[in-house]
Amino acid sequence: MAALLWADCLAQFVMWTMMEYLTEVWKISVVHAAGIVNIFSGLVLVLQLPMQYLVDTIISKYWMLVFSSLAYSVGIGLLTMSTPPVLAGFVGTCSEYKPECIVKGHKILFYAALGLLAFASSSCSVESTEFAEEQLEIAINEHISLSLIQREFFKLLLFMVPVAAIIPISYIKPWNLRFGVSAICTVIATLLFLSGTCTYENKEPEGSPLTSVFRVFVASTTKLFYRLPSDASELYEGNDTDDSFSDSDDSSFVQPTCGLGCLEKAAVILPNGTIEQQETNRWRLCSVTEVEETKRLLRMIPICLTFIIPGVVSSIGNTYFVEQADLLNKKVGNLKATTVILLPYYNN
Picture: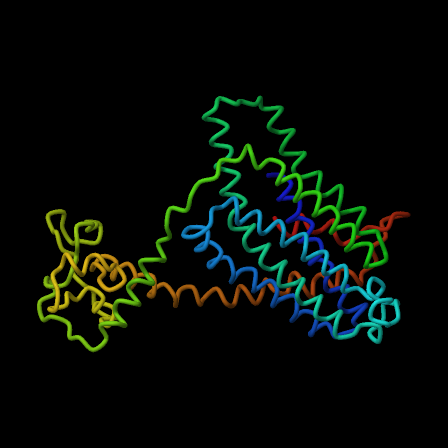
């Protein structure tokens, strides 16, 4: 499991150096390079929600981590192939790190690599912590105990292994070797993760709360031309009423709130069939509780929009600040430091 976290650290290192690669090799402007890096970072965050939904409904955490580890390996491998020297003989271009040596094929490989790395980073960041906690809980239940010194040693090992690998890699000048060594280390980390397959406890998906939200949208859309009853108690509530939504403990019906009344049509009981028949199709009939939960979720969207400004501010950190740090005098006495040593502090 720790090997997968090491692969994630290597991917972060690769993206940390992407500003330097784009401005020095591709010779594009800082603004253009920052746009590419920020789109990648935004894609990683946006993909976390659908990745979590897939894990909760279709595939388990283990298989999502398997796919993400493979995507890490292939993504960094394609990134290595996108450098000019690797395919120079195959595509008939020069092998120097100059813009004229980069053709359409290199760019296709580059953007394909970013897409795979975005998928891998989003799925790994969502599931790696939860999966590790599940395995730790299983180990505790099996009475596998470690002393305090042993636990601290493993924590230190978990941190030092990727750092010990990343810092020497950052001193490699040729980009094809820098990305290539990262790809090899990622493949090794993937193989280490897969080697523990027999020891992992693979839990089946338990369902996602977002499914009820989608059901409310589908049911309300199919009943778009039906009228709401004048008495709200005629709406369907079912047997799974949550009293936390009610005004009193004795209430067995959740009163619909004002606003977003179109969603309440999902709880309308149609006259052309019995309730038992309509209950069999949960995508056509939802309870008032499910409708109210969907309303609450939609009312949180304006609050979430306030995070746009902090997101804009944070986007400067992994683009312009990295580029500025790369242009500074990095000598400390007779030693020349690398900007990668700032990566752990940036993540924390």
